[in-house]
Image (cartoon, rainbow, N blue to C red; front, side, top):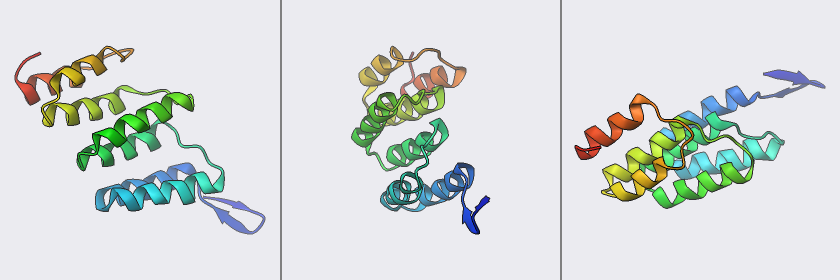
Length: 126
């Protein structure tokens, strides 16, 4: 936290921590917190912020919202990291959308062992 003219201004790291807790409780509350408390204070979310939101969407099977978030990240120039892609790929596989998961892999700059493990464990094939 940073003090600015006698007011306490929360850092993005602190706000991300709060966002992560909220995502585990209710993605809609977390999304509202992001809009009002993070964007509302003029802060820009980073790849970690968006990763938290992606986790929330995918845990609640809101894959469409996950894809919208992916597009927002790209539009705002936020680098989509392998964790964000893996989160979305995992949700797609769990929902039987293997073809879409594999095509999403084609968008990735690099893969990790986790990426391949998701495909192997969730669908039993590569």
